Amino acid sequence: MLQVILFFFIVVAGTGGELCISRAMKGIGEIHDFRPRSLIRFVGRALCLRWTWAGIFLMSLGFFSLVAILSFDEVTFVVPFSALSYVVGALGARVMLGEKITQHRWIGIAAVTLGVVLVWWSRG
Amino acid sequence: MQTEIAPSDTDKHLHDARRLQIKTIPFLLLSVVLGPLGNVLLGKGMKQVGSFRQVTAADLLPFIERTFSSPWLWVGIGCLISFFVVQMLLLTWADYSYVQPASALSYATVAVLGYLLLGEVVSPLRWTGIAIICCGVLIVGRTSPRSTGAI
Image 1 (cartoon, one colour):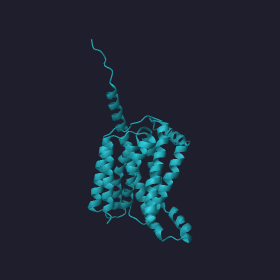
Image 2 (cartoon, rainbow over the protein chains, first blue to last red):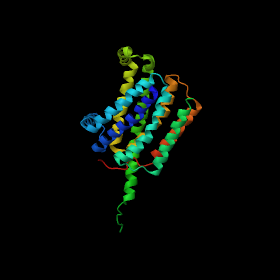
Image 3 (cartoon, rainbow over the protein chains, first blue to last red):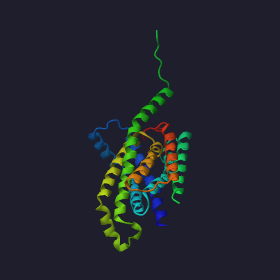
Image 4 (cartoon, each protein chain N blue to C red):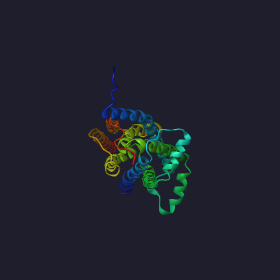
């Protein structure tokens, strides 16, 4: 039961957090300058956005669930299983960020999901 | 006399997609190394600390103290923070629905690192699953990284 709850937080809270971060980054716009000073300014600017903090909070929830589950499960099983978040993420990106997901991209995401199911089966 | 032909919208779109793909690849490669490395180091640290399942309420504080005194955990956190900044940079120009599946290449890195550093057994079925995930990533990688503008 504990394992199920922790997986739920890893997938749903983790993905929700990444969507919030993505929303914040879309607000900043494309970065062209990668010099250290510009990168520090970029991180500082990102940290002033509410979406970033909402993302950090949700991702922290996912992260601590990951740390907890890694203490009693194999990393090669835990991390691939969390790839279920790609399906949740694609739907979230479409609804929350208005991204146009092409047929090719859906096929790719479906392949990723199939791969995840195989990884899950491989546990038994 | 030659007349200059203005590039069509389709040409501009293709050029932009190609430019973004070239810009995106090195950042993706960096993230598929940093993320898994961080996770594997966390795994190594947590295995030294002991199982969370056997921790009672009274043992919780000593468990947290033990966890955060592990050097492997801190190196892992450093890798994951770097991974986070790289992902943030990627998301300023690329779709979330592009970056996330493309980052799934990290599953191959996780399996290799888990096998080499932690001595975990990776079954043929798990390798097959990881290979299919990588195929999915390649399909996603062929799409344009950006479908929306800045918000």
